[in-house]
Image (tube, rainbow, N blue to C red; front, side, top):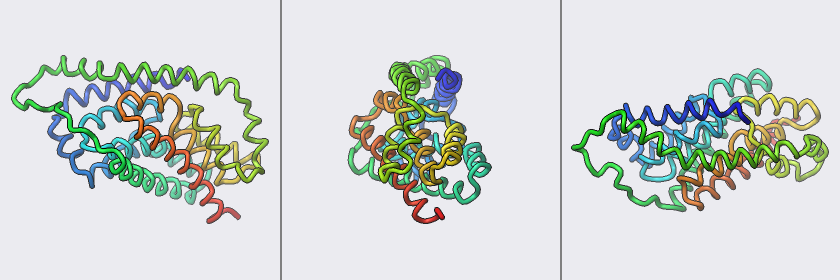
Length: 270
């Protein structure tokens, strides 16, 4: 689990740097549109090489300037599952069919879940930018941006500790023994979600799952559920998102990974 720390620290500094260098009015202009903002943040998440933990500081930053929860949810969905590296790995190990399926399914899910998030929980109006005349010093703004991430760090460390214990003591033979069960898709997702897997690593493990007898759809379920959301992510987003949104986000990932894998096997598996 220690390998994610450098990426998380880098993301924290990027978030603080954005707060320092980019005019808040620009983010307000982009994120205030409920129709286009989720699309833009979903695309942003898809082009940045982030994992489900290193994306948290930037997600917190996006949430600070958006009028609804749709943009941050859309970003949280695509950031750990879509990037040029991940799609190239998926193409190399699974082929173009699986790569395109993963791409379009993830984008559709990101925008749909973002829309639902805006519908089920209205975001309260904040007064972060009540003054337009004051120009705070860049250094103080940078350290303020770092300070904003402290609650996230606490929850992230708690989640990493729990996930490390589970990853150590859950035997890998468990998923292999249930490969023939009709409940294999939800069981794979249930086992994979709590365990942290780096973005990209999920593709390699998914190929290994395929090689030992699982179907491509079952490997897809594992890749999406293991890389998309994990215990560190769940604990971290609880520091800046309402519980109702966190439950929606986690439940959505669970159902999405199951349906996407099952649908792939129904449509394409021979």
